[in-house]
Image (cartoon, one colour):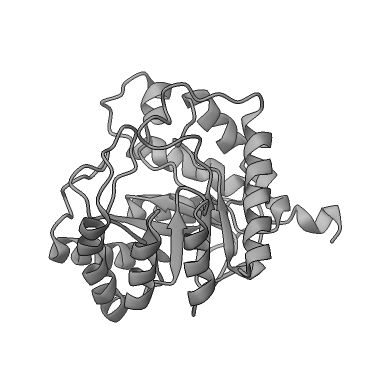
Length: 290
């Protein structure tokens, strides 16, 4: 493959059953946190009925994927036992697989949780630990799942203590290339792999901004690029107010990511981000509306 071809953004992502195709603006992955302690909306959708209703609302707002998680991975979060995480997510995934029209992603680092969620109808494993666990790789291969490989320096319990890089974009580029190649060697099909540089996971505020500016660098890995920046702390750092509502900042970053042709953006507020992206596209040169 030539360098020119490698640098083009991916055009598709094949999941277990669904094929996602990318066009002018990123697809949106709607966040469904079934947790009491997530950094932005912890507890709001902890009840299964509330979680399902929230997910269906995200679908109506224009989400293309629903990302269901039962364990907070915010900095210094407390790990959740496997049995509790299973209790939180499996029934919700099962209901959404019947009631929603969108592919469902399971946000977990536990192979048993991923396996149960895929059996319940999920199509994607979104693993913030980057598929370092061979058992998680085996689950992905067995089910033919779509996979999202994220970079994280350390673990949620200590990742923000002293994140350190000489060149954050290039080091993460190398890591994601290595994990992609490992998955290919283990039997995951190339068209099923998506890559995520891991905004906020073992990065300083400056590292996060460098990754957003350099997001197009990851296109030459030949996989869709996913970014999850929604409502994260670096937004408060930039505006010098950690207590500020971060949705406006989330939208601003989404537009920069769209400019960098990122494939998927993971967000809390699907409606607002989608509206901004649609207007961003409508105002592009050469676009005409009646």
